[in-house]
Image 1 (cartoon, rainbow, N blue to C red):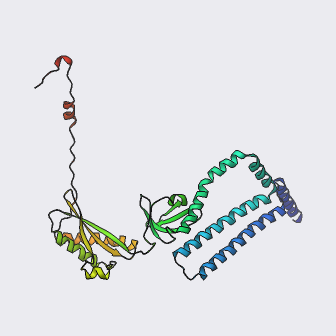
Image 2: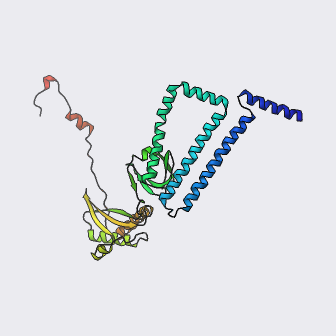
Image 3: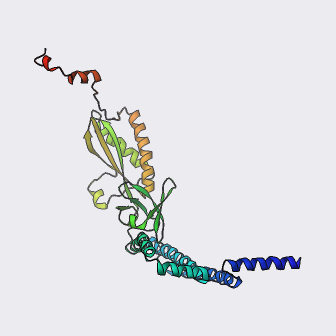
Length: 315
């Protein structure tokens, strides 16, 4: 048995030497990986302790902490990767030959890395100028992507939508989009609740029902200033915002504590108002459009042609 173990060990060492490695190099690789892990842990503890010591622990500080945490991890991993390559002689000579002699390859890699550097710079700008922070509820771009910012790192921003889907957007792209931030100052949201009614209904009665149902919702609160209360402004304003195609659109301005609560409140109010309208015999309008389609035979009759000898006035 000892002879067999010695033979296996010798075969393993011989295999390592064939591929250009030996036990010393393996120990060096293990040392590089262990050093990288230790540096990453130390930096993590330093950042965590620095974040814990800060008096203000809002979303600004948490965003900076998460960005630096991700940046340190990325830098350490990249440094460990190059350290491992430098430790292995065959890979080191191959890398030097590749980068020293292949100028075209270096140019291609530099061109391909432009987007990566653009994402890194955009991420630094996002953390510095704070158009949004981790935990903010935002809407991105014209498509209306709506969700909560979950993470910001060197390359991309992760948004958690209300369907529990994580959308990963490169920082360079999100930095150029229009951002609607519902949390940057305060989260109180004025929710529009729009109900279409027929032209002939009692508008005052419909507005009164909408106000009653809106004020009865537990998520609604009074956002009026003392001056507006003194002036007699209603707690829930309801206005006629459009008259079109036989439809009168009534809009209620209802306040909730945050965007998510406001959206859920709108769904509840749509149902409650429709039920009240049904009980009070108030018709909800639906635009009706008429489309006329010409019969193919009639179209052919209009385009009929006659031979030259038959052209002339026809009855």
